[in-house]
Image: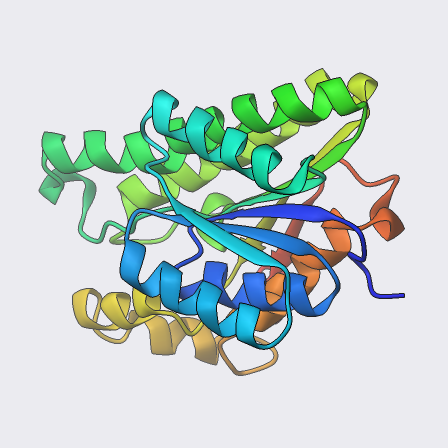
Length: 250
């Protein structure tokens, strides 16, 4: 039996990058998957492809910075599949530049998506899982949430906050049967990493050179770690911060 056979998993931020790759992993591991993102076209294309391969997949659009939108896509998941066993909260935006170079508007936007969005997803998902008496949530932070570095202060602040939300949620909702963990990817081959290569010249290469495995990760590798945390094989893990970084933070 695959890791996620019989599970219903919501993937937030599923249209590209880590979210899309993780959705493929979850489906291959036996889950029924609801895909959510802001942009319809790539989301629909991914859902169509996975469905054509025989997987049980649905999709809907949503904006994590809107409480009403989050409530709608969580409700749509339950309406479509009948329950919610797991959630992968991956929606996020990047922000390069020194702290004094980030505009107030950009700072507010990244906080709204990366921090408020994670909180809104947690709140709506846990409401369903509490009624069921079980569930597992994996939030996506970053190695930027574990340590500092130059040129990404606003982004790193949000990823530290995601870890704080996760640890608090693990305490608050463990007694209700809900596990909450966090993945902290290192450099991972995604469109966001390509953007960092443009905005911070040499920064990505320097991190890869400092990584013991001497390579960037893939979205599938992050998704495989998340699949384990979502599965019953991780039944006594909650509040864990799991770096998926090739050893960079060791």
